[in-house]
Image (cartoon, rainbow, N blue to C red; front, side, top):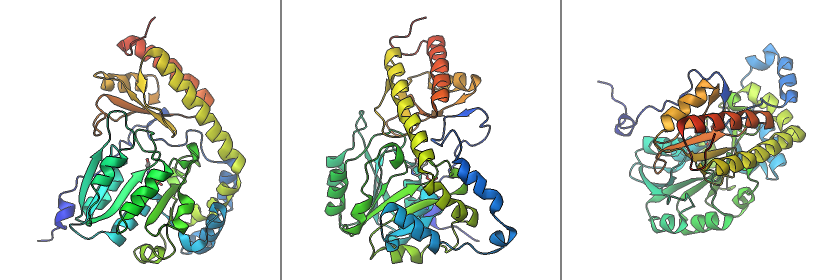
Length: 358
Ligand SMILES: Cc1ncc(COP(=O)(O)O)c(C=O)c1O
């Protein structure tokens, strides 16, 4: 009888709640406005001949590398950061190796790691979700082969500092250290340029968030010059499709679009934080395009009541350490106004927050 590998048999299928997403989508940390109009204008110029050919990644990789300020040898375009994580697991993990992740965090770190048969150790944050550097360092062993850290982290929005990340890379020289910077555009701090000097540091970036291209599946894996050929060996040469490759240079060139969207999100994030403070609903300080709120026992009713008002938010209460928590994406100024209006009503209706008054 055909049997999947034991590690795969132990995995659960991951089903993000993608069905019935009509309304204001504040549930997946996507761009809520849509991509640059220049990207849309490029699409009709894609020809049947373009689609008939296998996609050629290398010329666009060069453009992306130049945009980032890195040599092309450091840069691999991927089918989203998801594929970047997958490739690192394929390239560096043997069954029984150890992987360290800081929880709560992005689910794919654990899924791709566990699929190789490696053992995943979760290092849990304290209740303030500050990066648990000392705890993480104390868990590094000679068997540690991958340490995956999202900064800013999803779902908390909290960050690790560059010093902390470099300390980890130096404490675990036999491990690939992945810093997933999917939310970089909303934060601004990076360890990207450290891949030139640190022999085990990798950085993931995505076009799914600030750039509004989640549906096209494009990301970046940057890493040390000596290691990238190893990662390329396990990558499909065609994993980034031709439509994504055609629009990516256009998306990168429209820096006005990006800065305008990011500015709106940052302002909205501040307004939302203030409003939550006023209502007495706790939210952790976030460096990303979302906030994590502690709603408490009525988190399910909260999500339903927001949906009834046409706003989708994400229940994260089953994430480790996130009892009663809901994550809300921040979008444009207008969407944030609408969100705040609905929040006030729902907080009042459900008697949430310590300061809610009619
Ligand atoms: C931390 C983090 N990394 C990666 C991703 C996925 O990125 P991509 O769409 O590029 O695969 C997400 C999406 O939610 C995320 O939160």
